[in-house]
Amino acid sequence: MQWAHSLSIGGRRIATHAPSYFIADVASSHDGDLERAKALIWLAKESGADCAKFQHFLAKDIVSDRGFKSLGEQSAHQASWKKSVYEVFQQCETPRDWTDALVAECAKANIDFMTTPYDRAAVELTAPKLHAFKIGSGDVTWTEFITFIAQQQKPVLLAVGASDMVETERAVAAALSVNPQLCLMQCNTNYTGSAANFSHVNLNVLRTFAARWPGLILGLSDHTPGHAAVLGAIALGARVLEKHFTDDNNREGPDHGFSLNPKTWRDMIDRSRELEAALGDGVKRLESNERQSAVVQRRALRFVRDMKAGEAITAADLEPLRPCPKGAFEPWMLDQAVGKALRRAVTRGDAVIADMLG
Image 1 (cartoon, rainbow, N blue to C red):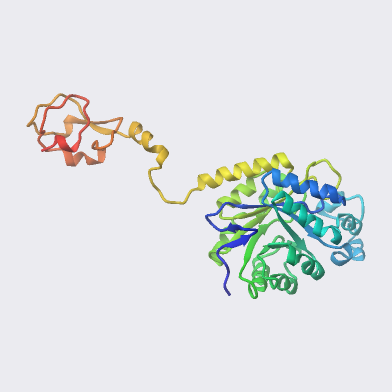
Image 2 (cartoon, rainbow, N blue to C red):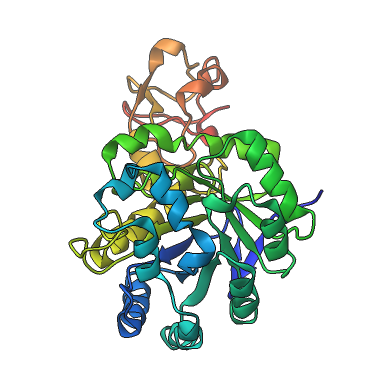
């Protein structure tokens, strides 16, 4: 079972040492309005997103009305919904006849189009129109569907929220059995937007994934408030980041409350790019912007008294003081100076340099 160490999405290379790829999940935030969906595409682009993602599902093909009603009281983020789960999903559908318009609008905005398909017809409809597929955490156990999506030979972004390592291994194997182009995304599927969820995001799972599948592209599908989880994930090696996106957190709808808006999305991008720059390449060196600092902060061996040519230097004749100009003896070089005769006279405070010594 092999996996790719880099992916190409819309001409963007996704790899460990490449900039992170950000997906704005519009999801249901279009509120059933195509023009609003188009406007969100442009806002996502202006806010710094690389991709505007939608969700292609039909209520009848994703949820059982009877099944949810038999559960009784709705739980978690659905507890605040004013309508039944089935009715909310109906309202949140991305109509199939919007697809070409959404693809065209993304092209105009110069942002990648992507979707999460929830049935085979959605896969077949969108496969010719996109560069990569996202598979939601809810389908982690539907391995037949995972394999079907992977068979389209597009990069597959697989979220594995609400699953354990055995389930994750099985889902990964289903995708990799037919397609090495995989990004594995850690996720916590509590959509309440509560700060308490930080205790459950478990970003160190990314370390576990990296050890199990060395070189596999990793990501995070995140629903926590703010940017802490995203920044932590980038530091741990995630290079695909997904957050929900809206223009107004106060709108009524299942996703608006915990989504990022254009202002908070832009802030996330800016902080992430700063972090990427700060991470560097891991090679320890004197950086170019430290060269002057090294001179003024480091100590050089300096004479504590005037000395004549021919005198032998003792340890008592020297002390370590700032600055340390290029070519000066540093404190660790004391043994290289002690015992040497001076070729010329020196003045108190002079730094020891090689051509002074006999």
